[in-house]
Image (cartoon, protein in one colour):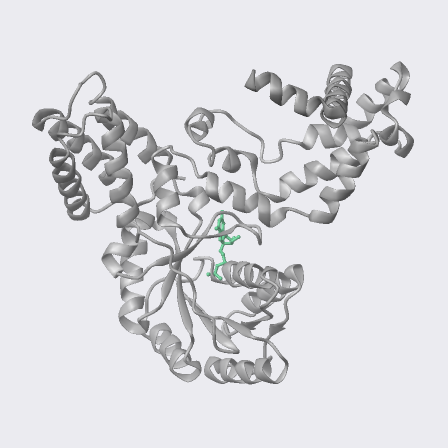
Length: 440
Ligand code: GDP
């Protein structure tokens, strides 16, 4: 995400390195680099120029501020400007009525069906929401099936009407069905076309008029850059929608759509899609995103994700096992599973300040724990519970079974033993001792 922009902004700030103070000359040079970085990120020249104009003004106005290095000061100014460009504060959905109706609009292939599912999953996890998905793409039976598959995957009911090819009546009936059956959110997935055409616009406008959605969300593929911005405008002219879901940001290294949709269309980005899986949906926080673009990390999102996945009962159970010195490989596997639920490792690393840049060129497997899991899976239940059983010949068997080397197995066993020792020390008051030592 935003890799190129991050690189180029970094270079732009480099111009200021070694300068003691901000001056007309070095600001002009930096700003030129920033403008180039924005244009390369697929921000239109007009917007890039406006943005850098404001950055320049701000930077020169701060001449007296000497406690910050010019590079740091400029980073802060650019960060604030980019956050503002993307909308400033977070825009939440308004789902107070019951049922609340969400209408999904957008071109074919933008990710509407996938994101209808992700959104249902997101709301379902909130516990207070019971969503119903509605299949309104009457032209492609495959699309209805796709939504059914998604619904099954996340355990959300899908409303569809075979033989009915009138999306307006399907949507209206679906809302009635929701009312009668205790669903408090209705998410309507509609048909898209490959490009904007009159028939599609008329149809979506008719559905919109019939069900009067609380939230109409325009779904758009961020990788299409300026085209995404233009399509967003065309749909907004017809639907006057509440917000945007920007999809496929995981594959978008430029970020032009994310940076400019808000300014051009004057509608907030409410969610971003960052992968094909059902949990790859994030609420869009412009300020946090700006932090990430400027390499400041996003610790708040990291902590939130951890909290979301945190299983209190499991934590208590593991705590007990540690206390009685019984933490074994089954518990270890369980912990790995919890971490994996938080998302892919590279993505998580990117949220730690400074880490994103460092990790950029390092190839991390999507599933960094694969090898470790394979080794543990090759152990017998008895071995997992009591690793001391694992002698030489057992090590050989485990290596063979997991497709790893003996060295890999040895390394894991050693790490596990070290970890167990460490846990014991923490339990036995060692933690306090260690903390005191550090204070010391
Ligand atoms: P629709 O025609 O608008 O309903 O689009 P789909 O939901 O069928 O999505 C089109 C393709 O894009 C599918 O292959 C999805 O798996 C993929 N896709 C959707 N959202 C994302 C995303 O956020 N990231 C990635 N990498 N792929 C996505």
